[in-house]
Image (cartoon, rainbow, N blue to C red; front, side):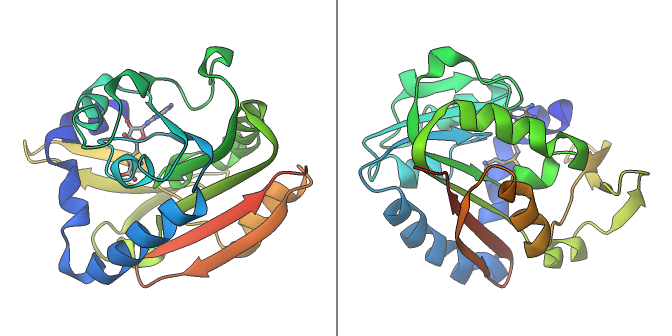
Length: 212
Ligand SMILES: C[S@@+](CC[C@H](N)C(=O)[O-])C[C@H]1O[C@@H](n2cnc3c(N)ncnc32)[C@H](O)[C@@H]1O
């Protein structure tokens, strides 16, 4: 997946230019910053910083992280984003040096987390968050499979897609489509309170709050 997203970084933003996604994107561009207003926020797997540029002006401070340098180089150039706060960090090993946050956001990331690693990812994320922190994930709905059909399912139930890049190479990418009940169960063990789940035409939104 890392080779795939490194190579795709220069033209990754094409996903936000698809006409059928325009209404959802417009909604999210208003909705997401409002959910984090006045909070110090940690963004996971920020990629090229498409959402970072919308979140940063609303937050008290945004630290945007990604596992790879190539997409982060684009995030650093986004208006309103502090390049010094764009940091390489593995989502499964978020260092203490990042600090403590009242909010966390990840766009189109949870779908890439293997089912067996969801707990590990959330444990590590929650260690970086203060009590009462707000966490919000957005991701693709199954409509996205029209572009990339599921080609494989492994023994754990993870699904995979073959993704072509512009250089003609093909990449087998883990991409899951968790249902609302799975998401609820995933955070229940942390005593989290569900704030919102909603389906848009192309994306879902899942928001919860950690115990105070
Ligand atoms: C689908 S992109 C999402 C980018 C951005 N959040 C967005 O919504 O446009 C997935 C991102 O996950 C990053 N990534 C892959 N493995 C990672 C890891 N172990 N830790 C942190 N980021 C990772 C990739 O570099 C890529 O930027």
